Length: 122
Image (tube, rainbow, N blue to C red; front, side, top):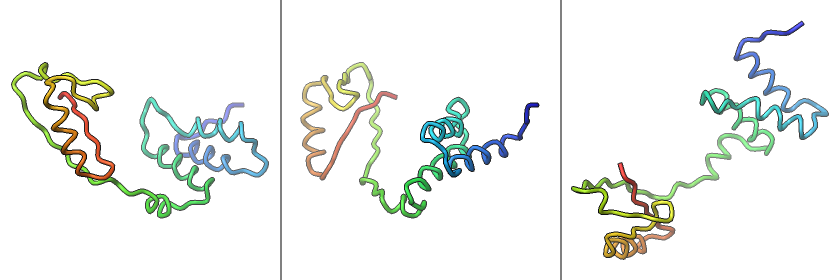
């Protein structure tokens, strides 16, 4: 006999089984993989996954939030006539062309602790 559960019930079943007494690490890992559905991008299962990890680590969502500090950032969009003029390397972190652009970016970024930059084509 096959048991048919609604989606929410199956997520709850998986979540509860993650922390059952005597569960082996391999089983727990399997349940983690069942909780996340990467093809759908379901926010509820993603949230439950994060909650499960936090519980396993003995952390609360507030603990997790307080452990993260976002770096100050600034997003700047610059329109140029021909985007083929700008050539990048190193995962868009370095400008190869025009040759005088990267030194100017480096000088600006150097003013900030842990500063970084990238150029993205849009």
